[in-house]
Length: 183
Length: 254
Image (tube, rainbow over all chains, first blue to last red; front, side, top):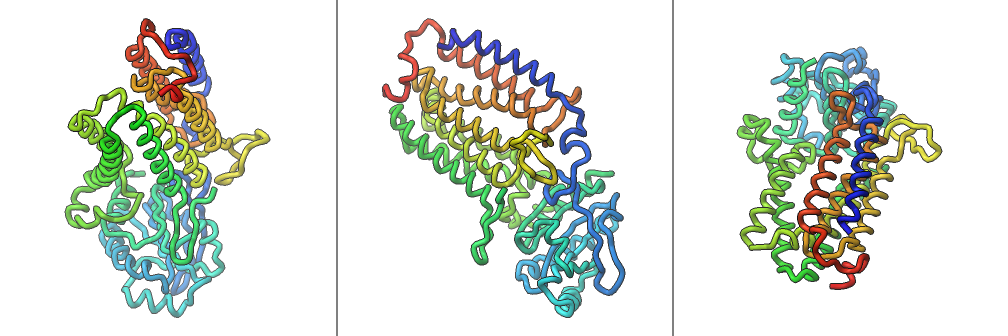
């Protein structure tokens, strides 16, 4: 059967070669180009504008050119509490190299007074954003807390970690990966 | 796409479960095939187990080596249950290396062992396709065909379905063993060759292809090389001069 199949395989290989040639695409035709926004690896991070705890607003796309770590959390969530000191430590260590950490509190299922107490308790120095209506949580298809998105300088999500607490090595390696990718 | 299922406080990652199911079914089929080919069943089962274990350990170590100072400072983090900190390439190399070493140590004959693994590999590829359907990975390119699915903000080819259907077809063909000669290694090669051929043709509908210079999709080029190599090996392992069993009766004969 194999000898009879030799002709067949030659045809398959030839067709495969032609098909491979015909289905060539420019890099921009796949997510190697400009990916659409979606909360998953290889896609552009969906943009948002949120109020900051303490006043003011912040828009994600304004941070283009910087490595960004978006952490969705709530004050009542035990793994969020467990990983927050490690996130703060990473922020302090890598801030000078261009890392921005955004702590997006799921305020629609939390209270602003608890958020403020939480931030004070852990001495958080990175921006805390308030998702009062849950719009960002929906756009990022949040299914568990905490959820963390590592976004490169071009605004593309490079890693997603659902659940926690994330270990120090996980955070540090992902941040180093982002910072190492340059502009 | 249905990547997660929340059961109270537990968040089940369904793609991972589909992969586990593929491993479980694949291991069971390999075990049965090993018995049919009169191989040491326990040795084949252990080979699969150690290869999988080594694959996971290798994947984590491969990732950790890239961030050595971080993991040297936090060695216990090697045990973190985070799939995002695995290196698939390192895991694959480690798993195959351990399988080869274990097989040699247990004196498992290469070709019959490969044939014992063939239905398991085919079943695992079906599980992998299911995992892609659940996670939305391996997604298709934008299209307006009537059977397009809306995914990641676009109407796209249901490439995960294409891949799963192709894997089911490969499984069905392997089950029939059209080349006969169980134990000659050609049934394993048939799974590899058919899977490579399917990838060459289906990759054109993917929206996440890695593109090489000249606009060539990397998976298609690699698939063509694998297809040609596996066919060449099939010819070498099953030369035309040898007597053949009647076609279509491979599995029933034994």
